[in-house]
Amino acid sequence: MSENMIPDLENAFLEAASAPLEAHVSGTLEEAESILSSHPVVATSSIYAAATLGDEQAVRRFLAQDAASATARGGPRSWDALTYLCFSRYLRLDQRRGEAFVRTAKTLLDAGASARTGWIEMIDRPNPHPIFESAIYGAAGVAHHAWLTRLLLERGAEPNDAETPYHSAETHETAVLQVLLESGKLNANSMSILLLRKCDWHHLEGVRMLLEHRADPNVMTQWGFTPLHQAVRRDD
Image (tube, rainbow, N blue to C red):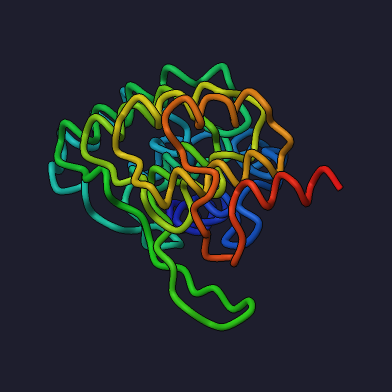
């Protein structure tokens, strides 16, 4: 294989292995695995590919060669390595790699990566506007990965964004919710959003946990109704 082909293959792999820019919680690993099977060199072709796979040792090698790679943006989406890691389909779908992803993220954070990293996406429904897609949203709201969520919070991640509270509620697992609540970083608005979304999901345990942490069921949300009203509507 010509070395000139590697960048194109790497870009194809990163697109296939990353959450799509719409419908973030979708897709499979089939295409990414097919690329790696035919061209295994792609797995360690850049710090972005290595981070996407949770390959701590490869990431360490890239950092040793160039310390600035901890924060450099690149690849097809001009993300930094930690953003690729947090929005990796492997993180969401391959539970066997869970601990490796946390170790790799810690390596990047220790080298200077920001726990508040992410990218700006243009949302065009119903009205075009930019929205910040944060690394912690990837960890908590896309992958629903409790250990990585905890690490990012410990390193300064801000969970009170437009995505994290809304989407982290979209599961009947409680581990990520527990981590968010224990962090003490959720503001009243985020707590009300989480409570409302748990009502959407008919997740009684999640509702109970939020109420025990003093989420207010009577707070008016941005959608024009309270979590209590939403619970009543869902029961009708």
